[in-house]
Image 1 (cartoon, rainbow, N blue to C red):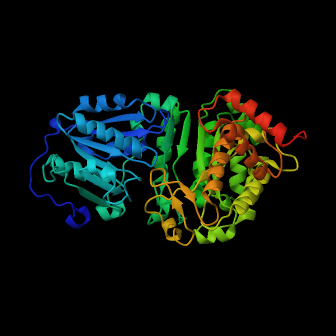
Image 2: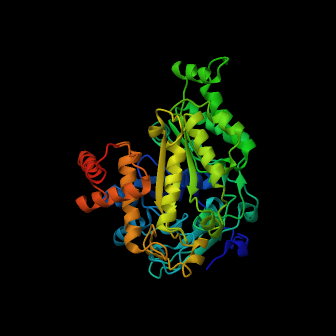
Image 3: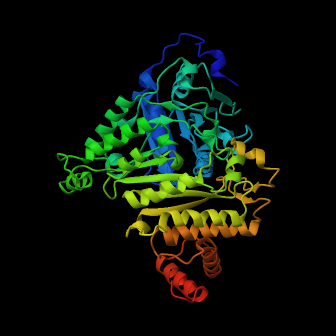
Length: 513
């Protein structure tokens, strides 16, 4: 096993690399075609002199296996780097198994990404790997490629020697080298037709037990002015959607406002008018380039100044992912998550009443110590904050969504410390969803999963407006009805689902809604 921290990246010999002979392929399986990988582009951008000989090949989950295998075989890379996430783990194993049967000249296989950073050494996917990079990979991947190409680190195809690249430390412990941006590696098709991922910071200030970001040593903020210049270039290229990967964008309010005001300045192409809202709308009508921006924000940290700035964005230009997760203070304390329910609900009310923002409010079912009743109370309270204002905006149903997720026991996260105390049983295959715990048995956990799926299909997608209070208990009954009728919660014709939902509502709740 090689630890680059201990070897300090010293070279064993002075053999020069022949750049003309290098062939590095970076690949991953994206969830959808519209989700290009920023990770692969960052690895390529930080390869130094090797970048010119590196190619990115992206696939998506729904592509047939042969459409993934054949391009990689044809490329005949010497080094194959694969980014692995929770969503493509099993598909990556399938891909590697197929490649293993057909290689004519097997490359050195390097795995990286959040999914493999904390798996045990005997995980099946590692059978196909020569090296694994844990944690940040931009600098470590280049150093490893250099050593492989100098033949200082060899992979034996038959013996499957397994080396682990240790890169859990931040880049300042790897020589102080800064990470180079990679936004220029998004091509024109990416920019104009796909969702473009960016990051102005990396890491998270919070240490929630269920999240891999809880393992971050600190938050690193990329230099702001160069970052904004990159965003300006993307806008000039005609970018349609920009999604920030920052885990808690508004923890640094001053910095967040600078970024928000930058995007506002790109919207406001006309001279300011007395009414700021009118100024923004006028700019929009006159055809200024207005991409949709997506931030993840912490509701308890909102200020009046932030609300005022967000209120200036025209409809359809701003989306916020608001992490609530649970409104049970005792559960929050248990999982090391800050809790301020009153402030969080007030923030949501202000966002619905004073802005045109599209809100995605997240809840997680299955947290240790949260019962079905407690979760339902939190769901209803969240629903009321989003939709229950005395005079809610007419478009609130189109602008607010409750995204219900099921707890995932991700390898390496601190949530495992609660496993025995709360009898937490989870699926051992990705995405590692919880199947039962001491508060919610397997049957009710399955009901919650059906609830989440039907809520997404019916309410979040606007097929039916559901307002029968108490919302949680009544929709749970409706989702039971739908699952009994269809025997599944996927692959259902939209119109059949609408008709079945209306039938269920009329039979379960005979009074007019």
